[in-house]
Length: 221
Image (cartoon, rainbow, N blue to C red; front, side, top):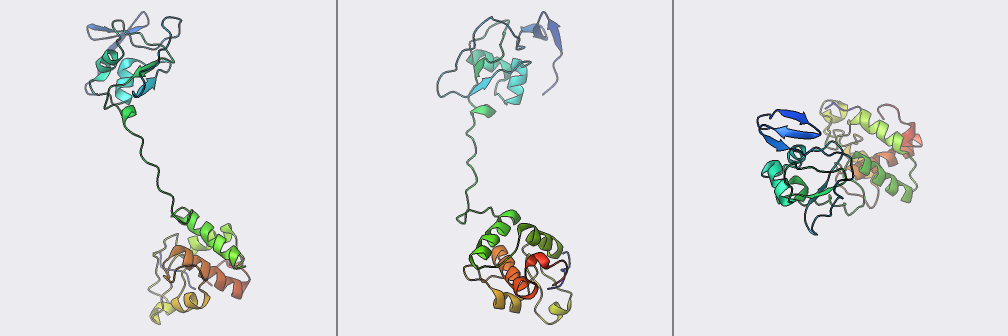
């Protein structure tokens, strides 16, 4: 199989004032400081929360958590009043609509095969099929040849070489021509030559019979 054609709004000025932060003419003592002032209080059950880190202040929390209404909304939700002091480890309730209150995205579904639908998953699934049929080959050997032949594109097709001129262009991850794919197709895989697992497994079966293993292939084959 020959080598393929490779194919924030305005910034407010802050001033330090005895450990507090002032915002314009309003005192915003919202920097988290160490101390034994108030003990951190737990937020009501079911509410989105944020645990204060050292150096946090209400304005920064409002910004990073995209809190509707900004820092005043956090202060109101937590019944904070001037000088709005918060402590590291304190758990703050965040208003509805904040980033932290949005539901976490659902995890990506796992394919029925149990293998990821990417090059890594295709190779691993091919190796599993090969093991069932006694076809030798390693992950590195397969990956190396795939990158040379198709750069990892399962839809790669060679339209310029002698095989293409004969009407049987090399296709898929390991650039297999249709007659070779048909002859060395491995049961349990798709008959679609562009199917990544079917293409790789058939090519490795061919390499096994001709070269002893895909690991022994280092150029066009």
